[in-house]
Amino acid sequence: MNLSFCKGMKNQKNSQSFLQMMIIIRFFFIHLHAFQKQLAIMISIIICSQYSNIESSLAENIKKTIGVDYEIVHIDNSHRSYSIFEAYNLGVERAKGDYLCFMHEDVLFHSKDWGKIVENYLAQPFVGALGVAGGNVVLDRLDWRFYGFGLVHLLQGNTTVEEKPNYYISYDASKIQFPLCQVAVLDGVWICIRKELFTQIRFDDKTFHDFHLYDSDICMQVNTIGLGVFMTHDILLEHKSEGTFSQGYADSLKVFSQKWKTCLPLMKGTIVTKEETEAAIDKAIPLFQERLERDKIIIGLRKLFMDKKKGLPVRAYTEEEIELMDESAFRHRKLCMKDKDMSFQEVWTLVSDYMANPISRQKAKLFMKFLWYRVLNQGKLK
Image 1 (tube, rainbow, N blue to C red):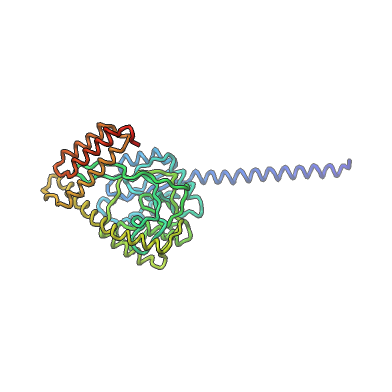
Image 2: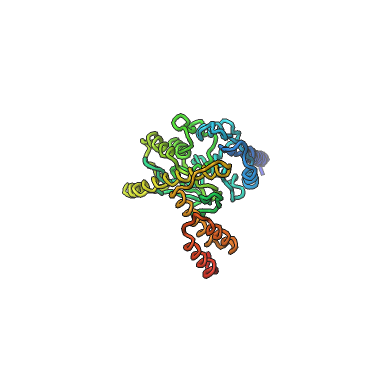
């Protein structure tokens, strides 16, 4: 065999080995860099709080469930010094994390390692905002929560309108077909956004000055910079209060519609005809007015309960207030009767409490339902 040819073959093999080694080394450092970058990622949880300190139960729940490096950015709004827009902008300034999670303080996480899910989704360049409840359609009237065309994946808690309120889950998490669904806007109970996006977007504290529509407005901004707004069913949380709607909310809706009039209607993740949207609006307007009137009574009652608890002199309940309290208490007891996880004694205690209340109006009806669900058909509870 030709000696020079053998030397050439040897040199070629050495060159190939060297090249392969360089490829392996480069591959190693690329993945090492990605791994180090992943380790450095932190989630900043921003909470605008009506208290001077975060409740220990919330802090402990986050610690046990998030599964990644995090910080809590507490914005003390106990003296109502800020609007929600100002408070969240302050939170963005203070946050050290790469991913920002804006959330209510009356939330309980049920999913383990939910922080890893947030990091995974927000790492996708097309995802601008992530939540667990949102609307597919934004119109120039009302809000998606009233005319439908939305998706909700959470446990919604509520409290009865009584002097001694009872907590319960008013509806369970809905079944969503895909783990990631595009929507137009998200509900502000829990919204996650990459911090880097806040060079292009901002909670609009110049246009809005209260606590309404911050969620829809920031999502509209995300849409306008070409990114998607998504909700996921991979994370389950419990929202402990339903909230109330006031005239201030109605006023903010007008401001929102005026600001975004050239972008509305906006539809994402669904197709809805003009006829369908008009029909939904016609149905929603009276429901919205009813809700405003109902929530006005609730707000007044809660103030009355608080004054009574403090020992202050209070007026007598109005007929409207009595009817609302009675309906709230009755509906709660009825739901509990159907709950197979509640014992006979637990349900009977609630029924007895209702029967002993002098303002209760549906005692005979509730007792008959108790007999039906808990005596005659107890084995058929679902």
